[in-house]
Image 1 (cartoon, one colour):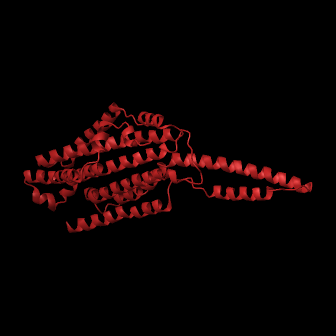
Image 2: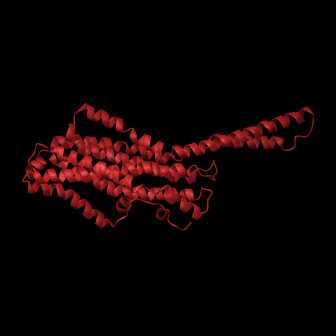
Length: 336
């Protein structure tokens, strides 16, 4: 059990490039270069004043901000998935070597599918980025927007494919024989923490979209606001969907144990009544029934979702962030 679960997974080339934990200074340099690139492009086109005066900076910086966001959150997501794998190492009825082999097979990615996902996203981004300033003569800024949008949508395409492929591991591991106590669901809480993290990543993405994207379609356009209000429900949906397999396993086990204890209560109660009718000694039957009833009550209160109140509270509070970003966008739109 000493091996790191991350070493036992089979990530794609993009996962290894993006999901690798880097020194803070390297991340800072990459972020600085991405932010400076559109400013340099505007300067080369001689449009630096217009760039800031007409809100072009929001449009130009959007791809850089999204790329930076992906670079920052991907290693965090990788660590969360590794924590889930290690948690299941203790739950799955399987020795370490077999479990490592199982994880490798379940996480093996299709390089062709990964390349297609990235390529389709990049192709869309190249076209979309070029169309953003289609009527402008700003050569360098148009070139930057096309390339940066291509990279942004390529990474988003890869991330979408990776997220869909990642569900395979969760699905397969929940199908294995598991050993756990239904009254103690703490071993499953890493799944709850991972679900919270995924939901928070969505919240962050929505906040960035509001902060940098509203200016593109109009801050006061009610259709945009309607779309973002609907999007605010997405983190909650993602939070619970990511835990659905765990919920199914826990619910099945809870139902099974409840049926067993209720069957035992009925059998013991019949025996008790028969002995009372025959004026026979009931022995410890009364105490046994009381113990079974108490156990039944504990089973009824057993949780079947691997999250705690703190996680849910964090999710609720975090949804306020996009609202704050929206207000900031309105203020920025008024000032600049």
